[in-house]
Amino acid sequence: MPIYEFLCGHCNRIFSFHSFRVKPTRRPTCPRCSATDLVRVPSRFGISAAPKSEGGRADTGGGPDLDDPRMEREMMRLAAELEGMDENDPRAMAAAVRRMTEVAGEPVTPTMEEMIRRLESGEDPEKVEEELGAALEEEMGEEGGPRGEPERDEGLYPL
Image (cartoon, rainbow, N blue to C red):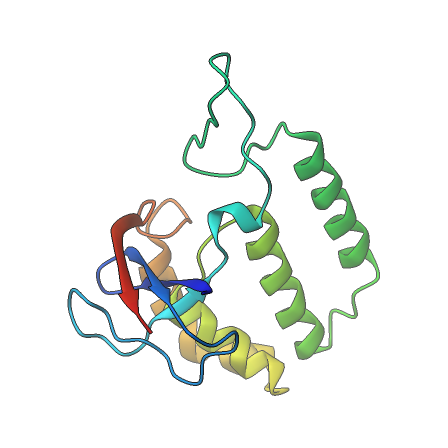
């Protein structure tokens, strides 16, 4: 039974949902605030295996280990992909942003998801930034990252 993780931007919390289908046909609602605009995020184990600590247990440390050689290879691969990107192609920009968030293990905020979706449809990047830039900055906070690391809900909910 597949488990999918979704971020609620309103609660800044990641929820896990189980499904009887490999490709679910609907998006879940937030179990906490009932929001309907949850965004699917990469699972923690989908980025890289957690390194083992001295006691033999996995050290999850709250995010990908940037010193892990596998993470370094992925970052180098991403850098090579970005070098050949057509900066004037909104679809290529969207693909690059998606890839960067996957490699870094960062959740995609609801406004960022909307921005990516619009770029994927070929909209003018300057127009998209003009319309969504302020909302994206608000979601990202003063430090340039999402409003702090999202909390993980320990529950497992039906999809």
